[in-house]
Image (cartoon, rainbow, N blue to C red):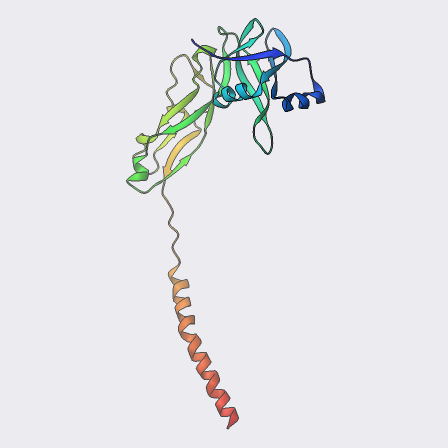
Length: 219
């Protein structure tokens, strides 16, 4: 199994001084896991961000810290509130022979005939699920083909996902992934239209009546 490699150095600077590192193009990080104390790290912000933007929460990375290599998952990324670039990352060290839990993204693919042919409305549910497996068996994402949604009210639930015998589902199997419902078309009530027509036709009559009354007063 070829893992994407990301390089890091042990970081001596901590606390408020970390802001200065970011200005120098350094991305602060930390690695932790079973059997090790949390270790502060520094990464090249530009190179690391390219990899991290593509990695999902179930992507195993090969983190090189000096001469040591660790298989890790990205457990958390912090971002700048305005610019949205990554400002800090937490890595979880994993043992490739031990079961772990992870959250995996769910992507809807294809077209639903109930939408294209019957004019239904596609409603999406969960966009990620929780699973358990060995690190090497973690899927980076789960693709769900919605072309099976042929009729209005057809649905796909978590229990319908095909995960294989190496992956254990932890999310509620009854949770919704996708469903097609009737599309509601808003129409203006006929009563309101009739009332509007009456007002439009009645307005000129009121004006004419007013003029007649004014003429009668002048006489």
